[in-house]
Image (cartoon, rainbow, N blue to C red; front, side, top):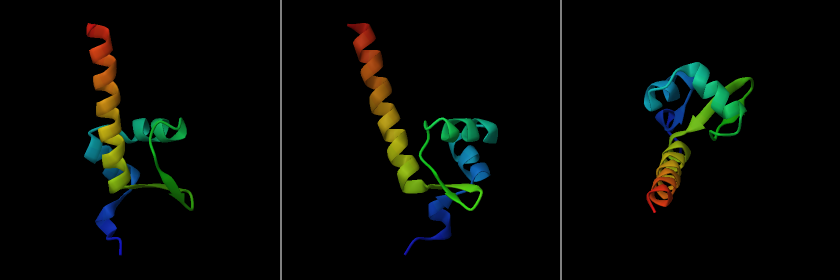
Length: 69
């Protein structure tokens, strides 16, 4: 069963990622950040966000490595 702390609200995610809430809204609206709506409010699963962060790290590492070669 999921715990309440396993799901972030926009302000909680902004704090977790050290971003401004408006940036979170822009990224999720643009499809750059995985999230889902509960009514009119955005929610983000911690597990999904952590996987997204790892994916971003791998993607950015590949880009940097390609530029060096």
